[in-house]
Image 1 (tube, rainbow, N blue to C red):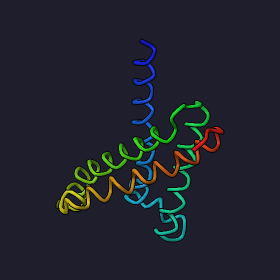
Image 2: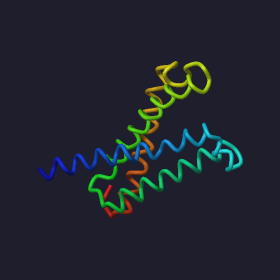
Image 3: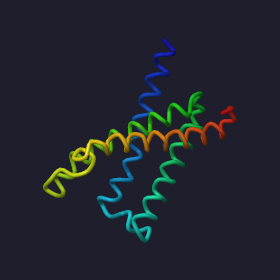
Image 4: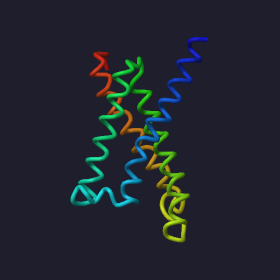
Length: 132
């Protein structure tokens, strides 16, 4: 029973962490990213902020498997961002754009976000004092 509760908590946390990362595309859509001077700098800074939030949450909650938790968080963000682009591009531009138009991009997005989750997970694991 306890194992199921932990799995449910992990899944909920994973989905919340993935949703938190949606501030990246939403900041571009709303133009908030421009307060950083340019989009490249803004994207990098927002990615670092999201990474710090992910690491903080996982370390604060003392997760036993921070790497897998954050890998799945990265994967969930990738899925969320693909879905978001499929919804928002037609509304904002009148036509479908993004990864749904070029399916190989879906694979690339998912892999890059898994790598992002892995890197943040390793950092969180170091903070927790776990061996890598």
